[in-house]
Length: 391
Ligand SMILES: CCCC/C=C/CC(=O)SCCNC(=O)CCNC(=O)[C@H](O)C(C)(C)COP(=O)(O)OP(=O)(O)OC[C@H]1O[C@@H](n2cnc3c(N)ncnc32)[C@H](O)[C@@H]1OP(=O)(O)O
Image: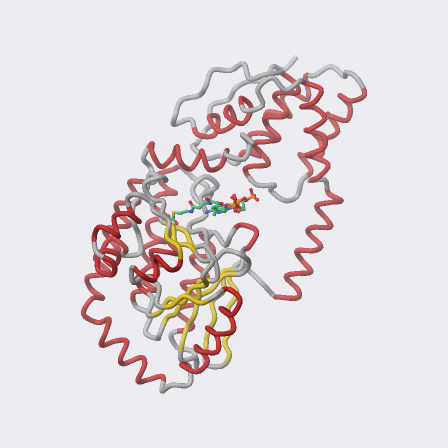
């Protein structure tokens, strides 16, 4: 009988589904046929292999944990080392099930797989395709009317977390907006969040080793932030909800920040084992003083919209009920102003800092590249990924 083996991850972030499928295939072949519910269980295992869409890391961790609990009972393996990231996340997911009976784990596994089954997948896929047809949407939607180019973070199911592709999409959107016919460019988010910052799975789902992922991240981040430093037109953030991480630090490079009173501003860099980016190590002390900047960037203090306004990060706060209407009405009026005059005035305000900002951006990216490889950061990312498996 093929034993269920505990395989060291070949690289720090193989796709959990690939590892999971390989291990299930190994065990499945060797298992003798058992009771009918075991047959449902094995059918469910086959269904997992037929999934067209990656169900996401949280679901894969849950599937793995339930599979192990159903076949081997409570977690009986030694906890993997801190750098054995994938197996550590899997161990934690399995261990979190405690003494859940095998039969219950088996039933939960079958139930979870059936919720991912091709039929339910097809309906959600169909819905997603239907959405794409209606909105023509990607994760970044760009529209241009009334003299305003609007760049919308459109990934509400993930709180508008920014993927590597979205960074590239935004760089291109800013490049196009810098020369289009609009007078002003505005950023905003779809759904209840403005943006929950960098997608924390960017590094765990990237192909290649962790060094390669960190190096790529630093290159992308530097180009991304430079596109904000160099943007020639008035750049306005319309913060419709909570903002986290890079979506907050970037605000120091915007020309105006209008926030709903339900918005919050959070930069949990120390919690994540990371460090400030988007020139915030310079712009935040300049805007709010070093003590307030320290509370945000080092201690991760989350600010309400009014606190962010009081500290100079937010230009004006609006009641949620009138926020969209008031802000877009105002921006449409501003967009009627002579565009060349606005562009030239922005250049006068920003030109003395551009070179300095580029240098600060470069230094922050180098620092972050090292942080992303640190034990503190790796642990924090794995904790985030496996946090729901513990529920
Ligand atoms: C290469 C350039 C790098 C630039 C570096 C920038 C630094 C940063 O931006 S650091 C800041 C990173 N962001 C975070 O730490 C926020 C992480 N998310 C959360 O803490 C919570 O999700 C949040 C408080 C935002 C919302 O909590 P809830 O209201 O409880 O919602 P959920 O947690 O259930 O979220 C719904 C759904 O979205 C996924 N999600 C949310 N944020 C992120 C994220 N930043 N990265 C990846 N995925 C995110 C979350 O996992 C949920 O997904 P499902 O479980 O699949 O539903």
